[in-house]
Length: 144
Length: 144
DNA sequence: CGCGAAATGTAGCCTGGGCTACAACTTTGG
DNA sequence: CCAAAGTTGTAGCCCAGGCTACATTTCGCG
Ligand SMILES: [Mn+2]
Ligand SMILES: [Mn+2]
Ligand SMILES: [Mn+2]
Ligand SMILES: [Mn+2]
Image (cartoon, rainbow over all chains, first blue to last red; front, side, top):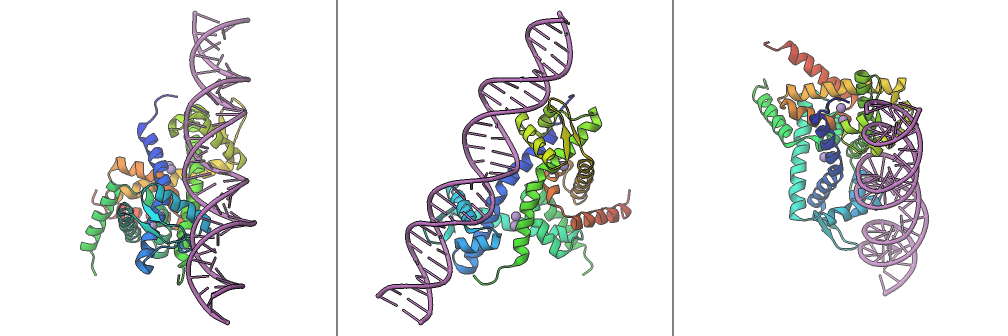
């Protein structure tokens, strides 16, 4: 082969890393949501909302604990650490911006919500800022 | 828990499915690229461009063959089936549209290319059409 | 031609993220 | 207050997608 484009490799690498962080991001956001609604996040509820079997949620929570994002005692609810809560807040904000951007460029609401769940994890800081700037511009220039 | 929003579950499910298709999509596109450039795709080149070790590429190609997307004989290059080529073409087109959309809303070129590699796999048909429509509109209304 | 280098293949390891089946604990209502 | 129902945990399976180490085959050149 001739040369190997380093940007392309970097793109694949970033996509892989993002994919490996995606699960933790969705769990943390979900735990935070449930904590707001019910005061605590229970394994059954986490599993139900994510659409997985409860042992799957259990394993995932074990990973979060290992990574310092959550804490829990046996047979009790799951709670986020400060670090986990900070991540949740960031993930929640990004989710909203991604949905808003999709809608702003003409994606139907329902579809925007569905696609955003996957897209969000691959949106970098730089891209997120660009989305925010775009949304600010199109809000301002609106004829409503 | 009270009710469980079916749209939310569907979003997570779609994201999981997209993630599981992402690898095949990137490999098929890459094999197609290499076939155009060199007439055939060799394992070493596929691995180098995707930034993985060659046995990883080898296993992935075995999966593509199992799924009817590619064919190859031992120690020879890899070739796409008609189905594989059709997928490659579709994936290539979507990649271009996603990059163009990102740039159109103000994401810097280099960042757009990097983020698109992950985002593309989560862009549904509906969203893709919305992107295309948006790009057509903004092309038309441009002052260039 | 034949030999060393390069490419490809294979074996076997790890982790993540799904699942089912079953065990253990907690909650609850009769 | 205690048994049944519900919830959580554990064991053990599967597959994907990474890796390294090593075996095999093909290629290219002296
Ligand atoms: Mn998500
Ligand atoms: Mn989300
Ligand atoms: Mn990609
Ligand atoms: Mn791509």
